Image (tube, rainbow, N blue to C red; front, top):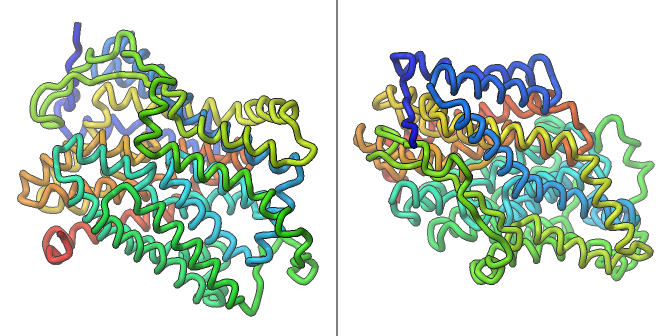
Length: 543
């Protein structure tokens, strides 16, 4: 027995979209205004979404609950699996004392908080995003910044903002691959257009991070380093996405930025070293080298091994090799039971629900193995302590785990009930102005799901159909969905839950949401204006 989605259950596109957004309004309100804990806000929003799906969208009760549980399961695996293993590796480096060596070694490169944020949150985080994605970079880099002594709120917020640059090409280009698959458009052309949008943001994000931390005047003190980081990343991102493809822009851009910035900081130092106002004065801090080269290499081994493992796990031959170490099954009572209809899809299409327990090829497994190997390089820290640390990490993350599961449940009930599509259809009524709103659809999709990949799967076909109706290149609107989506990552409750877990700020999700909201809106509007111009006045920018 099947159930057919309806997108105007209340008689009009506008009213249906307005009502469909009620769970999101409540989520915004509880996080930004009432500053409630993430799991409490997520519970209320998810419960409301289930009620609306049943009462207003006519979804059968059992089906609505089933879709929500399916989403929660996806939140637990693979997403929570990544978060737990990433924080576990960090916790082990702290418990073993190796993180003190990491802190000192970074101080040799620079003890300036502005440059540390650019080096770790922007450059190293982009490498992890390019290889793993799905929350991994924020989990790792936010924990590292807190360990270095960053104010936890700024550590979380800075890492979320920095993650904007690489998201569209994250996890070896999966968002672009999915966008091309669901729209049947040229993948290389989508990659090229994204590569002619995002570099305009990427080049200014290092400056954006610094200004957020210390203001414009103090940022000018490190402008040369900011320019090096921005140009290295944005230039590489443009070249690789346009002439190589969507698989490697993040990885190559990150490596070039790490090397470029590292070499530059060997020959240039800012006149004034900046720290947060509540930290000890710079003059009171030890920045002399306290460890040998061998000790420094040993301390960094967990993250070197992690980066190598995550990179290997992203390669297709490795994925094929590990595929037998897992299984997939059709989610009972949900797979192909829901039917998507026009205009979301060209013809009636069953909505699949296949749960992949790809334990072998999951990024979290790569991180777990990296952690197990890393124990060998930690003096006086055996596997007994590592296992105990793993279970302490799970206990530490119990509320973020609940939050992530609830948020994914919210995303899936909105998707399977058709509520997300009802909201998306409202944007199609904008006619010739639709290119301006294309990035907002992507932004909304990432806010809902926490994933640029999922956003492209959700709204890609709608972007293509609407673009064709108004005479705009559909590749542009599909690319804009991905480019706009990256600006929603920093306010996605799923991403914020990861950040609070990494910075020990559980219960303060509302503060981080308020911290990142303005940045998200500003960046989204930038992409909106650029897309509108590229649709008409700046067509020459498109491939």
